Image 1 (cartoon, rainbow, N blue to C red):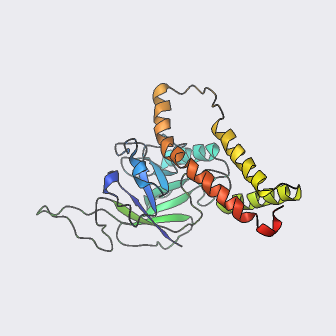
Image 2: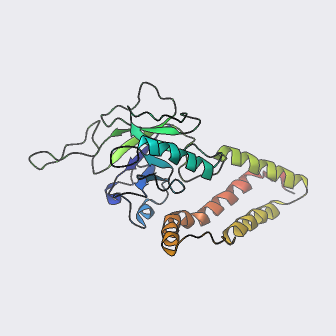
Image 3: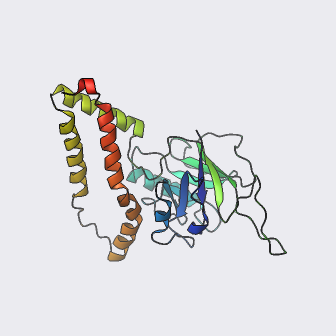
Length: 262
């Protein structure tokens, strides 16, 4: 199942309707202002590092003119993998001709390939997470904008097709959602065998979430400005925690079938 991802240097230009994922910049001249991602509630957010300075805050590195170089990409990928071992590979945005020596596609990184001419797939799709096939319209000599077409979007944004269902931007856990669900099922089965009720299991889940949220983060030498920036970046994620807890509780309740309740 494919998904539509849209990106722009102007967040307000991206329509929420028809957008399955939204990608915005966290570094460089096109950095999105604080709160910009909040406009796309309920839509997964992908973060683009243009300068290669924020491997721990972005799932994607922009490798092109005026952004990161191929050489920068090598060190960026290694830093991101070290920060999130076992997670989904870092994604490099580049055109179809860019090569990245020193790294192994699929194992070390995956690709977000730009064609921008209406081409939705390239000849070799190995390691390709997404293909950016549509670009924003250019302005003509008479001042008018190009009309929408198979290669041009209807506004100031680019459009991509995401081919890898396993990619969940923002989820840096070393396990897929399927694997996590399996672990939850195993845990529930063990608790049921130990004689716990559904209500007790739900209470344990909520206690665990509450404990994680109340954990005190140790001093790390981060400046006040850096801390404020990180807080803004984390705001969108924190805003969805309550809904995540509710969804998790619903999943747990569904996994505990009536005939197995005690």
